[in-house]
Image (tube, rainbow, N blue to C red):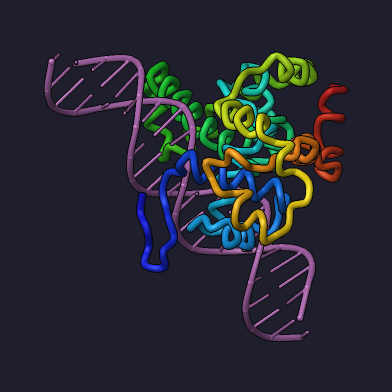
Length: 234
DNA sequence: AAATCCCGCAACCGCCAGGAC
DNA sequence: CGTCCTGGCGGTTGCGGGATT
């Protein structure tokens, strides 16, 4: 853990920080990250708080491996939109842009390597890794796109089967102590005690969670008409 | 058993767009 | 209209842990 001259902490988040952030996001919502960063007493930037929330703490997040269906969807969407990770992520409920980005990098690298192995001659014609990657992706796309589209609709069902994610422990801890502080919170009060972490007295209004979870993964209508509707028909 | 390599992922950085003033 | 602030996005880095030698 690094602390900068300005007293800003960097590096991995501690469990305590996570709890603290969860508390304050529950109070203020997923906005005003700079404000949350200040008020919470976390010595983090607003950006850092937002990132931590979006990529790790959000209750709607799915954990575990990318499924074959998701993989195909990623391939298809990437072929349409390129590296628009956040946009792609909106199509994959519970997945974050960061996760998809990471997945893409590692798996496409793997694919490129395998391809290189299987056809060593072709490597001489490729001047860069990125070109190889694109080639590999193109290959995947043609093989799988139509199948993927029919499978894409199944993903939602699969989501329901899933999967305990690590934050459950935290949610459980918090949920157990909810009622005591959910009503009558004032700024002064939570500042002093609501997030007096160990968070045993943390407030965690569950309806808000449901709201958040739904809203974050709500598909952006503007983006939608571009793609799936069309492709599903084909 | 130790050293090295490789992969997955969390986190940071820089840039940009949109909104408030 | 210009400036500042905030949040979102894509790219990149670095660490931890498992696999391999």
